[in-house]
Image (cartoon, rainbow, N blue to C red; front, side, top):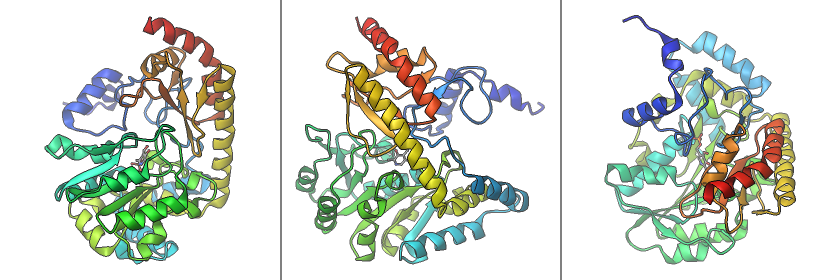
Length: 389
Ligand SMILES: Cc1ncc(COP(=O)(O)O)c(C=O)c1O
């Protein structure tokens, strides 16, 4: 049979999604449940669709990253990316005051986070809040691993650090905290988180997922990376998928003690997952302060438009510090019905999380797309009540 790429590309969304399920391809959380409109194009979102469902930065890759991608693909695409991987590893180690052995790079942080989850569940259970980005810590469950031990969030949907600490027993092999948290967008008090990490890490390994750290104001003040240097049993995950606008280029990393990194790396072949183009983009973007400032500005603009629309429609939202907003649709709200109603107006957002039926997450995205969300809101709310009735 001759190779016919167009046939594969134009497979319908639901067929593609079920094929992905059948082959075990991991799709970003919630996206498989949202069929893409046909005809599909090869790379980015379908033109005319406001894609606000996966917290990407659509203003990336930066110009410098694009140049590096072209150069790396031209001169290195034929070769394994070993040298570029070592270069980025050294760069990340040096900028965080760590050694190369403290850094592990994979194709997106999901992979190394999943390795950490498999490593932890080989010893015991994972402890986390009721509401957090749990995709990777849930991964071992499909292999017969234990369910996540969950602690309720506070009434304000914050992570309850005291309750988490009190829930650590001999069975817990890892505590998973995401800061800022996804989907709430809320940030923990850095002093309290630091105290928690120090205390909790005496009992078990503590994972802090800082995927959105660079998007917040004063990111370094909120990072737990210095605790690794101080010798605490803490691992921190970071990604190039968010502020750097490289979600499709797949580069993420984890920092931790040499022992923790060696233990976690045993559960995957991270080095073989990295690619020249992604590494080149990451290396070119890491210190691109102008692009990061520009991206933070766009996120703020987008967030203000969302918050104004929320208010104008008589709703409220959690005070987000990052590139998505968790909107309270009210007591009669239904995040899945709202998502469906938004999709009818070509706006893609997230559906319901766990039991949180009235909460709906929307990413900041392109300003014109956020404006489309704001304009679609009154009709989508009306539609949501109809769908629910
Ligand atoms: C909190 C958090 N961590 C990690 C990830 C995974 O990102 P990636 O695998 O693209 O690095 C995401 C994706 O949305 C996320 O929200």
